[in-house]
Length: 225
Ligand code: DX5
Ligand code: ZN
Image (cartoon, rainbow, N blue to C red; front, side, top):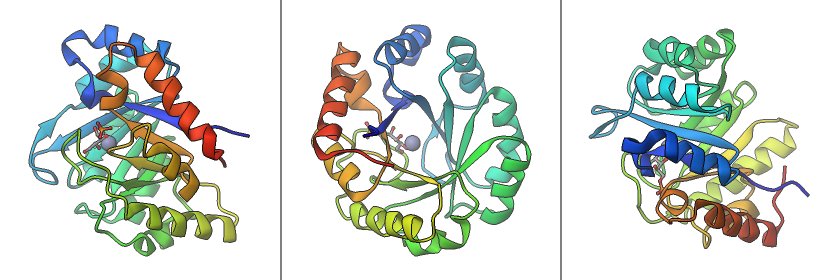
């Protein structure tokens, strides 16, 4: 049985102690680091940028996934790849041609995910799923950490998983926002093989214990794929 992968969302970390926080995530044996980038247009606030990606790249060998909550992600893709991103996550709802953006990113040798907001229909991603490396379903409205999990997202994950299996596709399915030791089980049951977790990993003193609990809860329902 394969267990669910955990991506630790740095937005919830103490960025004043970046090295310490990255080390804590490593010691907690997360599978990747998730970096949320906000442009003040696609979402109301600003957060993180290429500098932080570059800094984290120097601190760890863990894969870095960069969640671009920005308009025109095609314009900034190269800068984030050069900063050290292993996977770029772009939103279907952003102002760009998603198919073209996915090609641009993959042609530069980087993995690419397509993300959808809670209100966006998962069927709108179907034309892209043959191409992308990951589908990320937002289970909170993008832009803020610490929001409650929107349970209706699980139905979209079920639909995506069925589509993936029926068409023998390989893309990963990730869920981002409000994932806790209570919601991780339903995420896995619905068909996700990755979850992004911020507060529940970085807020407690013992990040390793937190990830241990998340994995235990995920394993109770049997993670897959
Ligand atoms: C929300 C971000 C998430 C968020 C997750 O806009 O994309 O990555 O930081 O934080 P938690 O797990 O605390 O909801
Ligand atoms: Zn995110």
